[in-house]
Image (cartoon, rainbow, N blue to C red):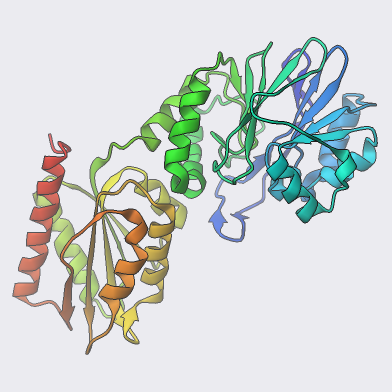
Length: 395
């Protein structure tokens, strides 16, 4: 970030990770990421908002030295996860006078994860303020976007919100501000889908609170700074709302073509009914792309062959993922084939329970689908389209 100025006295001092391609050993990062930290120089005190991933600690310290930061009074920890707080030990060693400002839950996690000494902490409550002289910080507790200890920091005089992971994007860029809006939109939607969507009700609550603030900038801990805050706020309003779109996702895997034939027939039947269809072949699918599609889709249908009495492992994982992400999907279905029997319906139904969606009558066939099986798929398509009409999605 090279110590770039957002407004006088406020600099971005974090790091760009151009090469990272996997987060938490789970989430694909096609565009890399940034670990954002922000330096605020008041007339009396200086504060650092968050740190960076431990792999980039030297870059953070180098940026602070370039800005000639000889004294650091406070390090605000909005979130205990290591990509934001992992460099705290090195920062505190470089600035022995600095105190960590955070809430009680975050303090406990930082002590557990980083073994920081208790005497280096200042614990704050919701809406508590901290004066840096001519700049004032307000702390706003924001649990479950996406950890229980998350908080936001608001800089009153410059109208800057530092929401940590909330409203962020995994997007490596040399630009300080979100100028590439289309690319940022897609990166932010992927980020929302993979990280924030399971906490949609909390997202709605915290979004309402944020929207009441006078905002000139939103400076998240991943991705560029939003110099037009309405861009990301309006996107989050849409994504986290209860509205779904006239779209059915068919998430499937096929071993000997039986399930693939069923998927093709169902897709054609849905198209005939006026429903937009997006198939995801799990053999090739980027799970981040699937997560993004789940943000809006009214219906999800899982297609799987039976393997050793249950769903194909890829389909099992996809069902678990859909259930864990808890999209606002209203309708869920299951199709597939089997050789002699199994517990596919029971296993998939259990994994999809967190969706709280209406479950369609499964269509499972023995071997290759026959004409009567294809008719059942056409009936499934009609039911899906009818539900979409009832939700006024078809125009």
